[in-house]
Length: 580
Image (cartoon, rainbow, N blue to C red; front, side, top):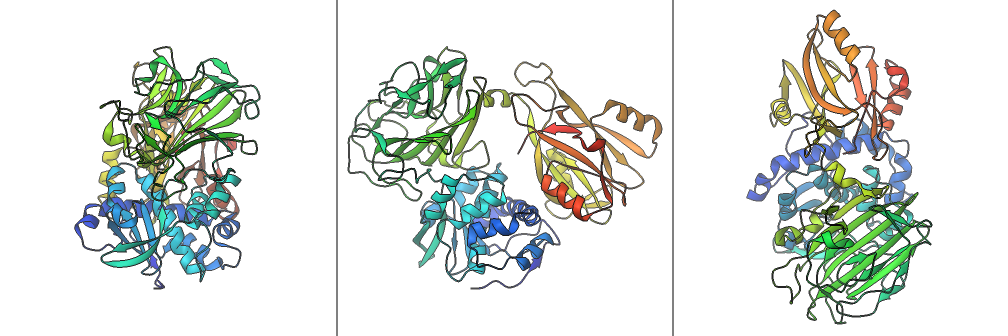
């Protein structure tokens, strides 16, 4: 079934082409917003200088992309029908695309668990939309998981060569029955990193079958030449413990998980793993292979160590599989990145541990410095680990350890929220806000208006602070300043500034500007230990309004095509924020 009609996005809150069943009605606003975010990501992707080469990487070299690029730049998109179904109907995937009836399916369980995470749902929608685009560009389905490659490129996730090879070799197809009809689909799962060598693709080294055993000491200096700094101590290696964790001082045979304060530990899933059984089922979807073994791989090209619990069972000799990974990546100077990756979690407690559920997190072992994820020791949340995230990618949790300190502890203390951008087409200016009440007033779940001016939602731009006070201590966060907002009563545009002198000058001398106070907070300079984004201010010489952006592709496009825009502040950033 070919879709040929182009529907220009006149109203960015127009609903998706839903069926009328209850599940679609329940999620209609959630999916409407998700579609808007996906379309905005596609529009930004279309102005990227690497658009042609990225599409060829995803869909092959023999494709025509010019008309597609023109349509996306103009905001013209063709979306297939989107239907919400029970996850069991699509092989327990988060989403799927069926070329036979040109339909994207999204799992209602996945949507329900991510009602407050539109970026997570957008990621999956873009993957399935990538399968749809492939069906329009190619007669035959591209090899591998072209949808996941497409989504990663659109969202600028920069997959490594290993990850690209894995996706290009992956078989993401399945035959399912929906409404009594057998249909071939392409699915969206959180996949374990594979293609690392060895018979199962998780590396050539593994721990022999055991219960409560561990590896011998593993030296890691081939990847981390100077070792790693973990909570102030430098380590040249660690022990891999069968029970879902690594430790540094000694191996750990403990099978009933306790809180993590007593061990110097990194634990993606601390529970009673039992790998003695060699006849175990393979979990649905993804790259796990059903070996019921713990593998480890040293990748000198990617500067990473990957430890894989491949479809492991629980005590005693139980064969229900869990599939997850721990990835440690070198950042230099003894700094490193920790990633927990979950493909399938089906059990949470071993047979000898009663109701003591798995623990997830990391700890210095000193009783005070530790991080446990909110999923830890929580039955329902543990079973949804593959849907959870802290980086808008389901099933993945990433923490950078800089100078021995994991970044998440500090981030969790900061009052942050996403900044949303709206556009006023008639006048040609933008409104930026993190205020949920204001967002609701503006969008009204339909065409929006504020003070007589109609706005259309564009997308979330970046993460700002909603206060300058630490949530736990109440102390002022160093380097955080208020971003003040003014309303121009002559033109209807808004001006934002972190500069106290500029604020006072406007108040004292420009009577056509109404001072609206501090609307959000940002940093006046980049941080040393955390990655921040510079935000630049550009003046629109035609409308007199200002554009605030951290997107270098957007800046380059404006510089090359819109001569009436000029960079302010001598080309320097006006403030600094966090990524979404």
